[in-house]
Structure formats: C-alpha cells, structure tokens
Image (cartoon, rainbow, N blue to C red):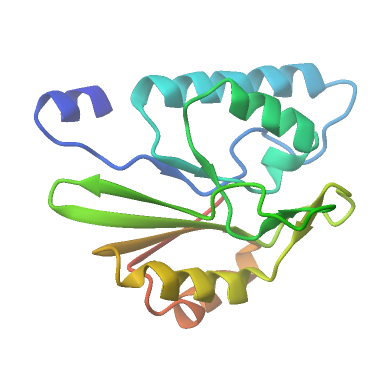
Length: 174
C-alpha cells in the first residue's frame, strides 16, 4: 500500500488523468445522487493516500463547473488543466501544471483534455495538442521529468507519443 511504501521511505507520485468522478457519462435522476456520493468518496480516499494532482476530464465536468468547484473547495488535492478556460473571461480555470519534488527529481505534471462537453457554456477548451506542446516547452528546462495527464478518446492514444515526444511519461484516462 501507499502507507507501507511511505513507512519504508519511498514517496510515490499519485496522479489521476481524469474521468475519475463518475462511473458513467449518463447521469440522470435515477443515479445522480449515488454518483455524487461516489465522487466525494473518491476524493476522500485520495485525500487519505495523498494525491499529487488530478487532471480535469470530461467526467469531472458532467454536473457542471459549479459542482466541480464545490468539490475542489473541500479538498487539498490540486486539480490541473492547461486547456480549460472560463467561457466569459478566457482565463484558465485551473493551474495548467504542477511541479513537485520526489527525492532528487523535479517532476512537472501537465493536465489536458479533449473531451470537455461542448455544450458547457461556462467552459471553453483550447486545442489540447497545441496547448500541450506549448506547456512542454515552458517547463522542460525547469524539471527532470515531464508527466502528461491526458483525458482523450482512445483513438488518439497512438498519436500522443508522436505529438509529445519531449514527455517522459504520458498517462491517459480510462
């Protein structure tokens, strides 16, 4: 377990690529309460083990930005996304990346999604490939290891190493 690893002097990096909150994209009156409970339970579990970053994916936005912000306000876990913007102001909604220290390594973690719902009026999405390349360039010289957390369709998985060759690790949701 993570606790045993930490007792042994190891400090694992705990990350999530997105689509964490719910078990289905089809939230409706029959399952929304249980799915909201699920999201809260997952966050409480991640709080216990210690989570370094969660990328905001499609599922985190299913009940809207207000629901997500309420969940984030009740946790110390950092949520990141380099390409989700406020629909009115154009400002990034979340920190685009995180830099953490693990032993002698400095790790940069970038969050991206191509799966945000187009009908979500409060959120606009920058192109995840272009944005990802931009942030890779920005942090590459500042860190030893670059980790990308990407919420995208499975058909895009094989493109990711080609589009982000400077990334040391690419983790996808699902």
